[in-house]
Image (cartoon, rainbow, N blue to C red; front, side, top):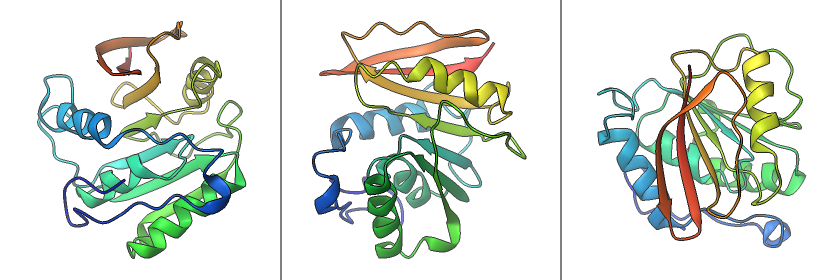
Length: 188
Protein backbone atom coordinates (compact mmCIF):
# COMPACT_ATOMS: atom_id res chain seq x y z
CA UNK A 1 0.00 0.00 0.00
CA UNK A 2 1.14 3.51 -0.81
CA UNK A 3 0.04 7.10 -0.32
CA UNK A 4 -1.64 8.09 -3.59
CA UNK A 5 -1.25 11.89 -3.74
CA UNK A 6 0.02 14.95 -1.92
CA UNK A 7 3.23 15.64 -0.07
CA UNK A 8 3.77 11.95 0.82
CA UNK A 9 2.84 10.59 -2.63
CA UNK A 10 4.41 7.18 -3.24
CA UNK A 11 5.42 6.58 0.39
CA UNK A 12 4.65 3.10 1.69
CA UNK A 13 2.07 2.38 4.37
CA UNK A 14 3.38 -0.56 6.34
CA UNK A 15 1.35 -3.28 8.00
CA UNK A 16 2.93 -4.35 11.28
CA UNK A 17 3.76 -8.02 11.90
CA UNK A 18 1.29 -8.24 14.77
CA UNK A 19 -1.47 -6.66 12.67
CA UNK A 20 -1.35 -8.81 9.52
CA UNK A 21 -4.16 -11.10 10.66
CA UNK A 22 -6.19 -8.39 12.41
CA UNK A 23 -6.37 -5.70 9.71
CA UNK A 24 -8.06 -5.71 6.29
CA UNK A 25 -6.76 -2.64 4.45
CA UNK A 26 -8.82 -0.93 1.77
CA UNK A 27 -7.28 -1.50 -1.65
CA UNK A 28 -5.26 1.34 -3.19
CA UNK A 29 -7.75 1.36 -6.10
CA UNK A 30 -10.78 1.86 -3.84
CA UNK A 31 -8.97 4.43 -1.67
CA UNK A 32 -7.95 6.42 -4.74
CA UNK A 33 -11.54 6.35 -6.03
CA UNK A 34 -12.86 7.52 -2.65
CA UNK A 35 -10.42 10.43 -2.53
CA UNK A 36 -11.27 11.36 -6.13
CA UNK A 37 -14.95 11.53 -5.16
CA UNK A 38 -14.09 13.63 -2.12
CA UNK A 39 -11.92 16.01 -4.12
CA UNK A 40 -13.96 16.28 -7.32
CA UNK A 41 -17.41 14.75 -6.85
CA UNK A 42 -20.56 16.80 -6.42
CA UNK A 43 -21.15 15.24 -2.99
CA UNK A 44 -17.53 15.52 -1.85
CA UNK A 45 -15.98 18.41 0.02
CA UNK A 46 -18.19 20.96 -1.76
CA UNK A 47 -15.32 22.45 -3.73
CA UNK A 48 -13.05 22.70 -0.71
CA UNK A 49 -9.62 21.12 -0.64
CA UNK A 50 -8.34 18.91 2.12
CA UNK A 51 -6.47 21.93 3.53
CA UNK A 52 -7.52 22.52 7.10
CA UNK A 53 -9.86 19.53 7.30
CA UNK A 54 -10.23 17.89 10.69
CA UNK A 55 -10.31 14.17 9.96
CA UNK A 56 -11.44 11.24 12.07
CA UNK A 57 -10.34 7.74 11.00
CA UNK A 58 -12.43 5.18 12.88
CA UNK A 59 -11.53 1.48 12.86
CA UNK A 60 -8.28 2.94 11.50
CA UNK A 61 -6.28 -0.25 10.86
CA UNK A 62 -3.13 0.92 9.07
CA UNK A 63 -4.30 4.53 9.10
CA UNK A 64 -4.36 4.67 5.28
CA UNK A 65 -7.41 6.96 5.08
CA UNK A 66 -6.18 9.44 7.64
CA UNK A 67 -2.60 9.42 6.38
CA UNK A 68 -3.83 10.02 2.82
CA UNK A 69 -5.88 12.98 4.07
CA UNK A 70 -2.79 14.39 5.86
CA UNK A 71 -0.74 14.00 2.71
CA UNK A 72 -3.38 16.02 0.85
CA UNK A 73 -3.41 18.86 3.40
CA UNK A 74 -5.66 17.91 6.33
CA UNK A 75 -4.67 19.83 9.43
CA UNK A 76 -5.21 17.09 12.01
CA UNK A 77 -6.27 13.46 12.10
CA UNK A 78 -7.46 11.43 15.06
CA UNK A 79 -7.16 7.67 14.64
CA UNK A 80 -9.55 5.48 16.66
CA UNK A 81 -9.40 1.72 17.04
CA UNK A 82 -9.91 -0.70 19.90
CA UNK A 83 -7.13 -3.02 18.70
CA UNK A 84 -3.70 -2.32 20.15
CA UNK A 85 -2.13 -3.71 16.95
CA UNK A 86 -3.96 -1.17 14.81
CA UNK A 87 -2.96 1.79 16.96
CA UNK A 88 0.66 0.58 17.01
CA UNK A 89 0.60 0.19 13.20
CA UNK A 90 -0.81 3.65 12.52
CA UNK A 91 1.55 5.23 15.07
CA UNK A 92 4.49 3.58 13.28
CA UNK A 93 3.27 4.88 9.90
CA UNK A 94 2.68 8.40 11.23
CA UNK A 95 6.20 8.43 12.74
CA UNK A 96 7.74 7.29 9.43
CA UNK A 97 5.93 10.15 7.64
CA UNK A 98 6.98 12.68 10.32
CA UNK A 99 3.33 13.54 11.03
CA UNK A 100 3.27 13.03 14.80
CA UNK A 101 2.52 16.74 15.43
CA UNK A 102 -0.67 16.43 13.36
CA UNK A 103 -2.15 13.21 14.73
CA UNK A 104 -3.82 11.86 17.84
CA UNK A 105 -4.55 8.26 18.74
CA UNK A 106 -7.49 6.99 20.73
CA UNK A 107 -7.63 3.36 21.84
CA UNK A 108 -11.39 3.07 22.22
CA UNK A 109 -14.57 1.27 21.24
CA UNK A 110 -16.05 3.48 18.49
CA UNK A 111 -19.55 2.34 19.43
CA UNK A 112 -19.20 3.93 22.89
CA UNK A 113 -17.28 7.18 22.43
CA UNK A 114 -17.15 9.92 25.03
CA UNK A 115 -18.38 13.39 24.09
CA UNK A 116 -16.27 15.36 21.65
CA UNK A 117 -15.25 18.97 22.14
CA UNK A 118 -15.98 19.81 18.51
CA UNK A 119 -17.44 18.11 15.43
CA UNK A 120 -15.07 16.76 12.78
CA UNK A 121 -15.35 17.82 9.14
CA UNK A 122 -14.46 14.46 7.51
CA UNK A 123 -14.98 11.03 9.05
CA UNK A 124 -13.90 7.62 7.71
CA UNK A 125 -15.62 4.51 9.11
CA UNK A 126 -14.16 1.21 7.91
CA UNK A 127 -14.92 -1.60 10.39
CA UNK A 128 -14.26 -5.28 9.76
CA UNK A 129 -16.73 -6.55 7.18
CA UNK A 130 -19.96 -8.10 8.53
CA UNK A 131 -19.19 -6.84 12.04
CA UNK A 132 -22.43 -4.81 12.30
CA UNK A 133 -20.44 -1.91 13.76
CA UNK A 134 -21.33 0.89 11.34
CA UNK A 135 -24.78 1.61 12.80
CA UNK A 136 -23.72 1.75 16.48
CA UNK A 137 -20.61 3.76 15.56
CA UNK A 138 -22.76 6.32 13.74
CA UNK A 139 -25.09 6.60 16.75
CA UNK A 140 -22.09 7.06 19.03
CA UNK A 141 -20.60 9.75 16.77
CA UNK A 142 -23.87 11.67 16.57
CA UNK A 143 -24.81 11.39 20.23
CA UNK A 144 -21.30 12.39 21.31
CA UNK A 145 -21.14 15.48 19.07
CA UNK A 146 -18.35 14.09 16.87
CA UNK A 147 -20.40 14.90 13.73
CA UNK A 148 -22.88 17.61 12.78
CA UNK A 149 -24.75 18.80 9.68
CA UNK A 150 -21.48 19.99 8.09
CA UNK A 151 -19.63 16.70 8.56
CA UNK A 152 -19.05 14.36 5.63
CA UNK A 153 -18.88 10.66 6.56
CA UNK A 154 -17.38 7.94 4.37
CA UNK A 155 -18.48 4.44 5.39
CA UNK A 156 -17.08 1.28 3.81
CA UNK A 157 -18.60 -2.19 4.10
CA UNK A 158 -18.85 -5.43 2.16
CA UNK A 159 -21.19 -5.09 -0.82
CA UNK A 160 -23.23 -8.08 0.40
CA UNK A 161 -23.67 -6.58 3.87
CA UNK A 162 -27.00 -4.83 4.57
CA UNK A 163 -26.58 -1.54 6.42
CA UNK A 164 -29.51 0.18 8.13
CA UNK A 165 -28.53 3.77 8.84
CA UNK A 166 -29.80 5.22 12.09
CA UNK A 167 -31.55 8.58 11.98
CA UNK A 168 -30.57 11.31 11.21
CA UNK A 169 -28.04 9.94 8.68
CA UNK A 170 -28.74 9.90 4.95
CA UNK A 171 -26.82 8.43 2.01
CA UNK A 172 -25.84 11.13 -0.50
CA UNK A 173 -23.73 8.92 -2.76
CA UNK A 174 -22.90 5.22 -3.02
CA UNK A 175 -20.29 3.38 -5.09
CA UNK A 176 -19.07 -0.20 -5.39
CA UNK A 177 -15.41 -1.12 -5.88
CA UNK A 178 -15.12 -4.89 -6.16
CA UNK A 179 -16.12 -6.28 -2.82
CA UNK A 180 -16.17 -2.84 -1.16
CA UNK A 181 -19.31 -0.70 -0.97
CA UNK A 182 -18.63 2.94 -0.12
CA UNK A 183 -21.35 5.26 1.13
CA UNK A 184 -21.06 9.03 1.56
CA UNK A 185 -23.29 10.14 4.42
CA UNK A 186 -24.50 13.41 5.89
CA UNK A 187 -26.57 14.27 8.92
CA UNK A 188 -30.02 15.00 7.45
